[in-house]
Image (cartoon, rainbow, N blue to C red; front, side):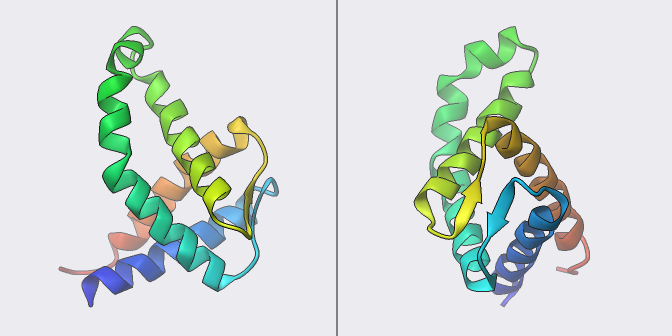
Length: 112
């Protein structure tokens, strides 16, 4: 039950990002649910591998490249889900940051 509630809150966070950034669009709540699921899978399966592979660049840039990596993964999710559109890498980076902050704030409201 807790996992389903987190999934729904992540979809709500994604919808909130679309209201804050006009360059990110989600066609509906069903698409937001699918995008939240894909983002969760990408963050679970792909991000650890890419974080390890890009560790030298991340160290050289003092961690700034990690923001770019988050944006690229956010952009990848938009490429996989029809109805979820992100226009440009800059929008993806800002959208990923906002999505992370909003999703964190919403998940903090749920007691374990």
